[in-house]
Amino acid sequence: MNADPPLLAKRTIMTPGPAEADPRVLRAMSAPILGQFDPSFTAMMNDVMASLRKIFRTANHWAFPIDGTSRSGLEAVLCSLIQPGDKVFLPIFGRFGQLFMEIAERYGAEIFTLKCEWGHIFDPQDIIEEMKKIRPRIVAVVHGETSTGCIQPLKDIGKACREMDSLFVVDAVATIAGTEVNVDDWYIDAAIGGTQKCLSVPSGMAPITYNERVEKVVMARKKVERGIATTDDQKTEGNQPPIISNYFDLSQLQDYWSPRRLNHHTEATSMLYALHEGLKVVLEEGLEERYSRHRFHEQALLTGLKAMGLSLYVEHEAKLPMVTCVKIPEHVDGEAVRRLMLQQFGVEIASSFGPLQGKIWRIGTMGYSCRRENVLFVLAALEASLSYYGAAISSGKAVQTALQFYQKEEMRKEGV
Image (tube, rainbow, N blue to C red; front, side, top):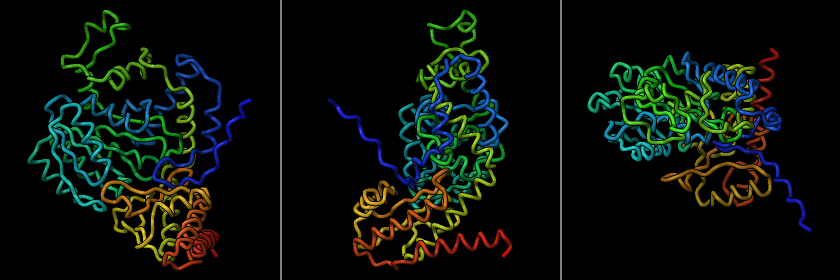
């Protein structure tokens, strides 16, 4: 007789994604399945759209999730906009700027890049000056680069894009619901988020929003599937080559998320339950309060790491608030430390990629993972693991220093 598989071990997840899912989200996912055209379900779809507008801080009509991981949102936007030969400008300061390039290349774009050393960001004026030379049709920028722990200011770039009539596409996967993302104020034409980071929803959906400038391009390429197209649909097809991807075709997804509810795919029902609840949690907390919470626990983590004697990879004003990159001490096997933390403490932190592989750890304080007990536990696990491997650190100080930080804040709030 086969034994039941064991339950997975409980983990404290302190990576730059995924973050721990909020318990309310997990409960919501266990609700019974509804049909995708059930009025109760379509009402939930409308609620999700309204909530996403608030979280993206936009008046855009189109705000809905793509079914798939965050990468599916990036691909849906780029494949719906890019035609072969389009000039696409990509300022790259980490791994996920490179991902933009990978996707854009596959759709036949003419790629232009500007690169800076990992761990740094661009002066927006440098990007703008390069845009003036290139005159790109699309500018795509990562807002929060989790591979390096940096955040790129966007408003001036967005304003310049609008003045030059370039479409401004932003990867806000790491930043949405964790720090400011102001789609309208920053002149962003299309923004892509992710569920598995600061929204504290499992990976599996990519919330996006886009404005009328993007919609105009999408509608010029509109083509409805033959099996469901009406005579009117055939008469109103766009005058530009159709979007290459069927699944990621925003023109068809618009019909699915509109009152028409034209069938495109079977909606990921339980994931929509999760997103619906996750968005409610965010809005109940309040965006400004949530941003402040991420900065607060970031500071507690930093005090503990520094007290331990560790050095940060990024400590300038462009540090991403919810990702802290720590230099691995000399003569320390970073992967051995990570394994010990996971096996003995159930705490997970991340390594990095490319030129930073083996040089830094990345600790995430995102969404539901961004809590006092998690910060204290990751500091304790990291200190104990480093001590076990004989690293030259100041033992016994990290957790105590972070505790003092928290207690001082409690006393300040109480007016003591």
